[in-house]
Length: 305
Ligand code: 3PG
Image 1: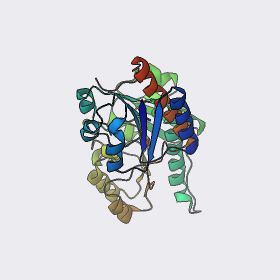
Image 2: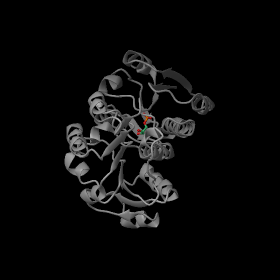
Image 3: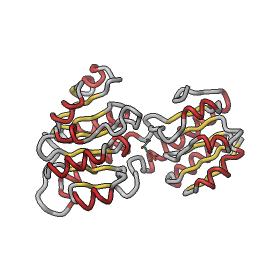
């Protein structure tokens, strides 16, 4: 059977080799399309039984072009790029690979936090993370790694996650909070790890950001859609002490940069999970999951019904 690995943003070469090894050892065949266009995807998926992607958009048009497709694995955490309803309609199992790239994303949170505290490394006197407070919004795999690393920096850590019992946070030395307003008002840094869902889209805006203490830093390694960009701009305008750093360029990135640089910073391309280790872990897990599903219907991480 053919397993298509389609990644607009390629995995590290060592990860690609490891994925190929897993697929070949199972007696299946891998087709690799990197930097592919939509047309490339529609063509390549035509005879694929399994599909491995990253943030690549997989909608019903792709599924219509893939009559043999049985399983899609998103090598990573967020699956808002995949039309789950359409997949269910087409009897396609969709899985993610939870936890496999979470350390990479968590490390970038601190890379960006330190960069902002040190005034983007311009040599002027900055500030330290030690002794500051950090609010983690969503205590999943990335949030937990962020908490672990924050302790090494000597930060005080709070977290909010309605799906996680307080005891889980407390066991990690994290103080649970139950109101998002408190998370923003009580922390010097707020790090977003919520998925983009109808409930969270546009949910971080003026009111919340304005609650942040003086010199607050909002860090987004989650999704751009969770930000109300107009509201955030208004807050940045009224509060010249606030800073926003994101691994996902806002839709209005140019305007943000023009009006608020150097208080805002955006990576050129989402790179939180772009490490050799994360690529290897997520890619190999995805390959193993595709094969296990095709072979024996293994679906532990299925995210559609
Ligand atoms: C994820 O949801 O796993 C991260 O956002 C990483 O996405 P990427 O595979 O597109 O880098």
